Length: 213
Figure (cartoon, rainbow, N blue to C red):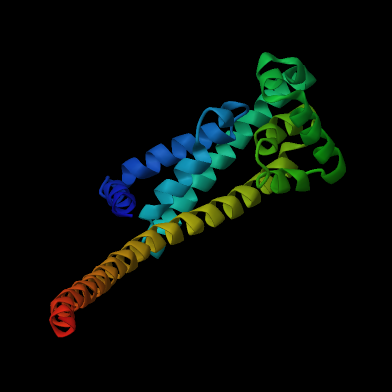
């Protein structure tokens, strides 16, 4: 467990602006069409969130991640608006899987702008929904509020999970280290008892032989 807390402490030792910049950049890339499969935005967010140890830090990271996620969505929307359904036949979407594009399109047909919010919590599909929304001519004034709401909830959830995980890792290590000392003490006591019993038996055997003789 020590290596985990060492890694978390190393991350926490970085300047907060650097942590925010890297996290924001990866989040923006993760939310842009297709790039989400190359940039580990969600993983980076969870890891960076382990440095969140106060309400102000939570608020700043939440704001940065939300803005970057909405920016990534807006880029995807713009691409969909410009290229339309031709994106479905692009090499990028073919590599991801056309079935995911079709699933995003179907979700938008059934849910409208609400699909933009829901898709934020759906792996793979969330990367394609903004572009699909642009291609389907969903009005940006309807798209943007759903994107902001989804990004705000998604980032708050992941930052909360990451922050709790960081605190839990340190707690678990402290408990683990304490337990190791207890187990070591028990092992020493058990070993001493076993050795004493064997010594006692070894000393008793010659006396028994003398009595028989």
